[in-house]
Length: 296
Ligand SMILES: Cc1cc2nc3c(=O)[nH]c(=O)nc-3n(C[C@H](O)[C@H](O)[C@H](O)COP(=O)(O)OP(=O)(O)OC[C@H]3O[C@@H](n4cnc5c(N)ncnc54)[C@H](O)[C@@H]3O)c2cc1C
Ligand code: FES
Image 1 (cartoon, helix red, strand yellow):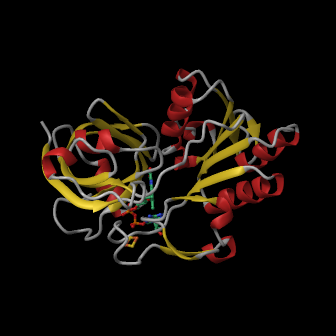
Image 2: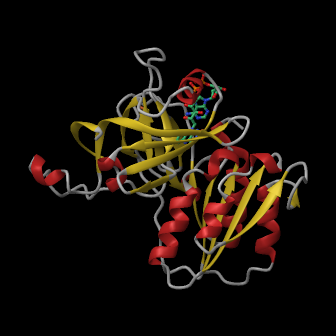
Image 3: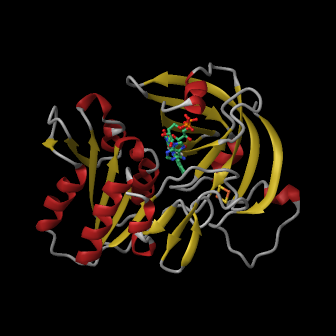
């Protein structure tokens, strides 16, 4: 059994702001709150040279999680590193969540050493996720590298609530060893097209270029695009989508402090003013972002 450390009485941005907080015994049944839990590691599997999938027992987070939300994990045993690290919730089911991660530094290095039975202080689900709108006739899901992580739940939600839309999944990576999640999308019955920068499998080139080719033949205006990956890729996806009048949502990454909207450490500039990636995001309408200010 996981040791649930209790509910943190704070709304995330996915909730209805005008409803009042319910008594604690009812709150645990509700969606849209965040929890701080000692999540038990069920497995921590190495998928490639730098990629891992960690499965955590965290029933309350799993139950409340929506596509695009994230967990904020204390990766070390104590306060080194001091700050938690944010990770998209890749899957949530039956009391557990999966996180796909790439080892890039100290925090993710420590995470890769976790073993079955270890516990991870985890806060979540946090942030505002994707808006899955079943009315669109054509849907593109576009992931670059580890950016595939939040998109599986998007696909899962679309196949659950959708009305037979045409869904195209485009995944990109540097080479075929670094392609993540293809089988999982296919198990949902979705067709996946791969782009690799070295051409080792699929389309040779960037996944944003592949997206550009796919939309050449797209005549419908009822198109939604859900994307996550490097900023340069997201910018191109956003520009192409804006040009064609597509609804486009992107999940952004920023270094984070609190993850709760309090420290302003993750602020970016948007058209309507400053935006906290942890609170107003990490998922944004692509038109809202001032891409020139994201340090490309
Ligand atoms: C909302 C959100 C969701 C994320 N989801 C995932 C995920 O599902 N899987 C995954 O592998 N990573 C994800 N990330 C990125 C992940 O949080 C960072 O890779 C991680 O914090 C790095 O910690 P570290 O201590 O290993 O690296 P550090 O030693 O802190 O830094 C190593 C390198 O990574 C860069 N970096 C550090 N933090 C971030 C960050 N938050 N965003 C971008 N670059 C960073 C640093 O600039 C440096 O170049 C997500 C980030 C955000 C904001
Ligand atoms: S990380 Fe503190 S406000 Fe976003």
